[in-house]
Image 1 (spheres, rainbow over the protein chains, first blue to last red):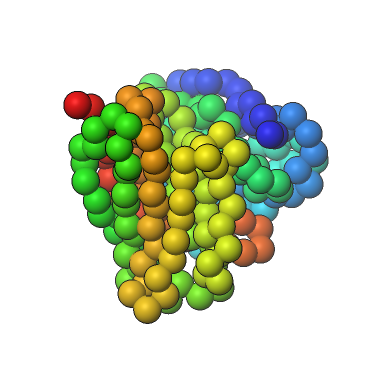
Image 2: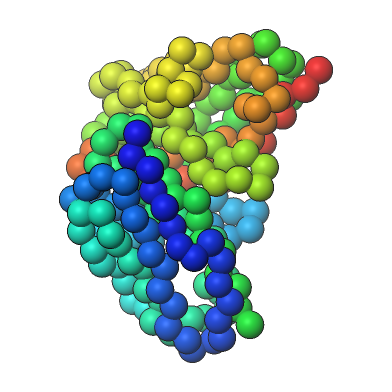
Length: 107
Length: 118
């Protein structure tokens, strides 16, 4: 199985800050890397697909980059509603696997 | 737009079979994979598997011996059966629509909590 490692596991930032979350795959996944946001009590929501594709309806302050084994999710201007846990997922090979999550807290 | 809704018992006894159904509304089951993903209390996300609209499944090897998925295109439903459950299978179970290209899950059900307990 491909292991996905996210860092940091949690962070705290202020409204308006730029935030970056990192995801590393144990082997190359080309661009088969997706990002999800999960607010407490809710189902995950797709933010980014194929490493950098912005899902329809997702604010443009969210962006993804990377290829191979190293990927980043950036929130360019943090908003109060961005308080959530973020997960990366590789969809290059079965079984699909998720990172452990990064909890984003608003100061 | 497409919506998904999980249904099934919220309480299952140890060693018995967990059975969940996901109903697809606002669209058909064609041309997508239909996924099951779970989240144990306070934990991260675990992919259980998916079934293609043609009926071909792919399961997580860690659960493969206990899992069966099926799809009923006439009812716009797909289902999960997990046999011989234990307390470790207690989780929120989500169904999802997964693209057949980049294999991302873009539509999720609200999730249903399943507790395994006698």
